[in-house]
Amino acid sequence: MAPQLAWIGLGNMGRGMCKNLVEKGDLDKPLIIFNRTEKRATDLSKSLSSGKSTVASSIDEAVSKADIIFTCVGDDAAINDTIDAALKSNMKGKLFVDCSTVHPATTEGLAKKITEAGGEFVACPVFGAPAMADNGQLVCVIAGPKASVDRVKPYTKGVMGRAIIDFGGQPVGKALLLKVIGNTFVVNMVEQLSEGHVLAEKSGLGSENLHHFIETMFPGPYAAYSTRMTSGDYMREKPLFAVDLARKDARHAMSLAKEAGTRLKNVEVADAHLEQVKKHRGEAGDLAAIYGAVRQEAGLKFEN
Image (cartoon, rainbow, N blue to C red; front, side, top):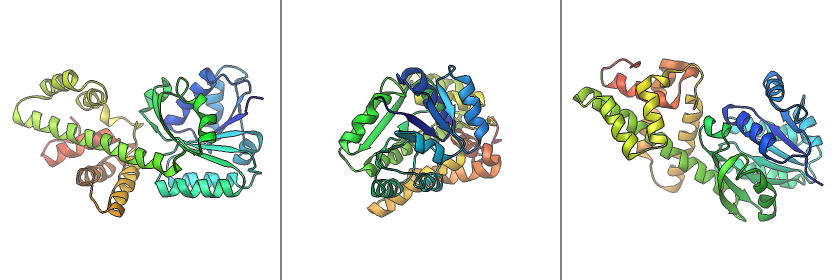
């Protein structure tokens, strides 16, 4: 008998992942959706094909009715609160799949609590921007007991993502180690692009000429972020990669580096710029707005 799926958490990534589960996941039962702000869950459910989803009014309702529960929330405190609420249900036979980006130790703690209560746990952080989540183009990193990982795979490649990095049989924390370290590549990319564009502007090369080089030499994420900077899209009111989440990832990375006896000096520089983004933009701050902070340091206006 096919499992009943539930989804908890509807941030920028969660909505697209839910949509693809419903549209491509070959579900024979409606997806159960829960979000702390119920209107978001209701609005998403209404946007999906009729009869393909239902909205739960509580975490307990979602968990009690489901066999596999996907979670995707903003930070460590939120996922701990979510799982603590879920633990009030009968966990026997429940498989939790957490797609949140959190500290590896947090993930290991979640796995311990869930397995001790009779459930199963798989870590499944994802790489990609919200647009990639909408288009089912994420890269899913899956870790945990191999049998549990195998139950999750049918909902990853070809459904929510374009590829998987399979850590089946490895500790769940390994997936989050990769996710946190991987996100430093994104942070450093944005930092370098910001510095390069500011130098191009101040040296007389011009941002358009630098952008042409980036498009030619580094198509993909580099070109996309370069476009966001040159077009002014880093000033959007609804961030694609919120400053608070970016700084959370940076803190986790720097903490892991310290524990391992090394440093991430590039991330330290980027985090200082993100601090300026937060002061200038508040919660509307976006990772790409590092560009504005670098501009300010160079005597230019934050807004290009």
